[in-house]
Image 1 (tube, rainbow, N blue to C red):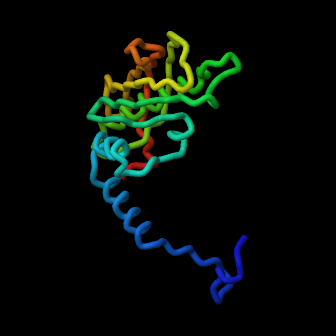
Image 2: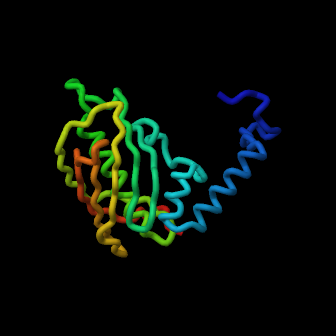
Image 3: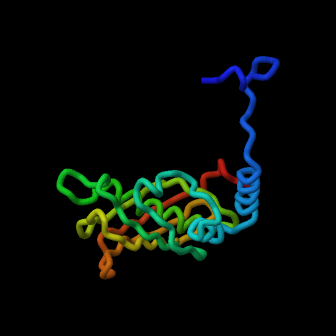
Length: 178
C-alpha cells in the first residue's frame, strides 16, 4: 500500500532511497560481479564478501565452503523440514543439493560467474540422508565446454562415505552474460 507521504507532486510513487551503507554494499557487490572469475566469485560467497543469490541456501542448509576452477565444496546440513514421512531427507532435496554443486562447479570454470541451467541430472541414491547431520558435497566440472558443460557431484557423510552422486549436463544462462 502506498502512503500519501510517498507520492510526489505528480502523484506517482517515489523510489525508496537507499541508506549510504546499503548503496556502498551494492556498489561493492556489483564490482565483484563484474571483475571476479567464476571461482573467485563463488569463493567470495563462501567468505561472506558477496551476498547469497537466493534464500534457497538457508532453506536447504547449504553453506559454500570453497571454490577453485572446476571444483566446489559445500557443507550441507539438511533440516527436519526436508524429511519425507519416513524420517529421512526427501530425495528431491538431495537432488537439489547435487544440482547446486554441479552448476557451481561449472560456473567456477567461467571467466566471470555465470549461473547455469541444468539440461539433465542423473542421481544415484546410495544411503539414507539424515536431518541434522552435516554432509560434504563436492562438485567437479569434468568438461568445461564453451556451450555445454558436464559436471559430477558427490554427497559424502561424516565418515567420507558417499550417500548420493550425480552427473549432469548444464549450459550457461546467457541472460546473465556481460
